[in-house]
Length: 105
DNA sequence: AATTTGACAGCGA
DNA sequence: GTCGCTGCCAAAT
Image (cartoon, rainbow, N blue to C red; front, side, top):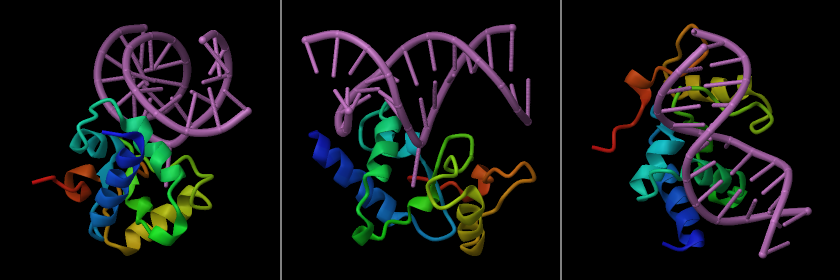
């Protein structure tokens, strides 16, 4: 797997995440056959061209936590978008992975 | 070529 | 449950 392809695969998977579901970086990396590639998935997101219109706000870390805050204009905004799509949040501000994490099936 | 950085993950305190 | 350290791997400097 070449590096550019890894990026493209990430974009494709992210583009397939339905509204109301989320995926973790590690999970995506694993689907791509890179069990330790979670960080690269993050880099792929950061470098994601806008015209792809990826639902990158549906990609979160394994703890259900959202992006650090300087990405979508603040964690509050990302959380709001997710809530509008039906993502279930817990009291501590994390996503309820049990309900909203997409299973690869 | 070597060092630093990062939208992560897992484990221990 | 939170905080910090370590492991991992590619991009950027």
